[in-house]
Image (cartoon, rainbow, N blue to C red):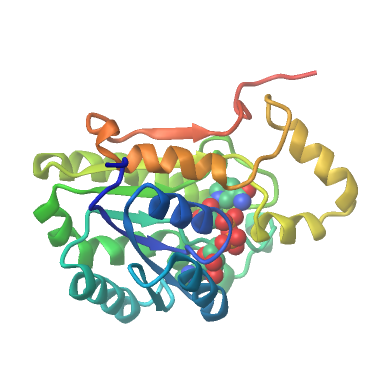
Length: 254
Ligand SMILES: NC(=O)c1ccc[n+]([C@@H]2O[C@H](COP(=O)([O-])OP(=O)(O)OC[C@H]3O[C@@H](n4cnc5c(N)ncnc54)[C@H](O)[C@@H]3O)[C@@H](O)[C@H]2O)c1
């Protein structure tokens, strides 16, 4: 027996970055993983690596019909869902609020936050049946703030608040709801952001230094905690907004 033996995990945005690390860690811990992602090529590569006891669906988490179809397919394929991990997200654009267009605002909110509404609408009955859990990939910026990312920060603040509300609403059904909050993690998303900064070389040092532990990690540090949070080892943890941030939020530093 491993930590996630017999668990079925529905994971969004699992074809790259943090989600990819989580998909691999979940599979290694014994779960069957169903990944929904918009990037068909990367999703196919991941599914080939994981093997045919897992599953995938190409679609956008902002689209009701895609989420409904993906969740229905998961249940058809595996018979149940124990965990919904809402991880898909975008960070662009890097702008203050007044510079953000209405389309950019709507896109960030529909992908990062409204997606949780769709996965919950279509997945909650399955989670009630398994007394399962929900894990949301939020961010430290949702509580700390960040320059030039107003709409993104708002989606993550919303996600952390929503996690607590959902934890209370679904606790009577035995469903736990938690959030995991990275600071920086080297993923394609962060690399894209780094290349857009005025001095991409200096940004690597900056990203190491914002973490008290002195380095910007890869997705495995998030995945290890995600495995714990969705496992029975965390059976009495709900409504937790868990920093996995190397101490980035600890305050003044030299
Ligand atoms: N990388 C960081 O430093 C960092 C820090 C804090 C929080 N996060 C959060 O972690 C999550 C994953 O980020 P990442 O850095 O791994 O990004 P990433 O861009 O490397 O991976 C995101 C994945 O989500 C998928 N995706 C994006 N939009 C989608 C959509 N509309 N529908 C379905 N799939 C979609 C992408 O195709 C990709 O596979 C995001 O929610 C992000 O906000 C990342």
